Image (cartoon, rainbow, N blue to C red; front, side):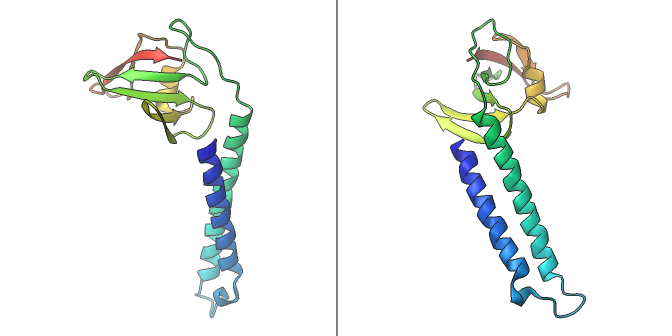
Length: 150
């Protein structure tokens, strides 16, 4: 939530700055081919749209109820999943409602947020500790073992 709040602040400020640039007197078109103000308004709208997406994500995390998991509980929203590769490497994923791709760290390393709509999130739903999962559809894609779900 802290990362989302920081992102919201950045995108909100960026939207305001782009809006200011789009409406600034120096951006008034000199001729019909001058699109500086129009381009700045597109940027402002994009930044405002991203800020709104982050607001929605923040609200979904504020309302989120963390579930409890054990080795027999199927993976679902709010699961912290540790996957082990063939080489023994470990990767951790938090199955969250929004904000896929965000990364955060704790004392044990990095955790990536994935959503149930992501390819890996879809594959993990319903699996349990000890099950195997393939991250991609291709035949040569690596297979990971679910080491823990908490």
